Length: 139
Image (cartoon, rainbow, N blue to C red; front, side):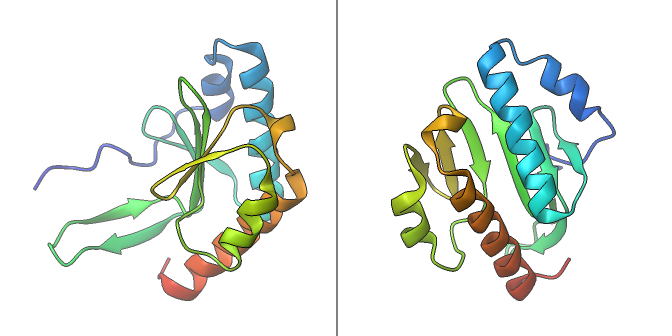
């Protein structure tokens, strides 16, 4: 079985943030990290080369594949900042309806810039996502 590519590393989150070429995206990404840290209580850590994750949990699929993943995470992708909050958590659809400008793909929420979204709703989504993980996964 192939090894997981996205694993927790000892790389510096601050050094990673400095590699984001677009100044606005770098500033927004850094502020969102602060919001995730504040709401989760977890220290940000690098997962793979481009994901900043908070906390971790162990998963095991019926296929036998298993590994560890961040409880919540984000990444500055080429076209957006991607938020990994999971596809299921309390009041997800209701919160997303008032969240602001975003796109969804799978369990990912994509935003362009911080001022496009409601930060208080983001904090609630983080809280609800953490609670959902706590209730449904072992970590």
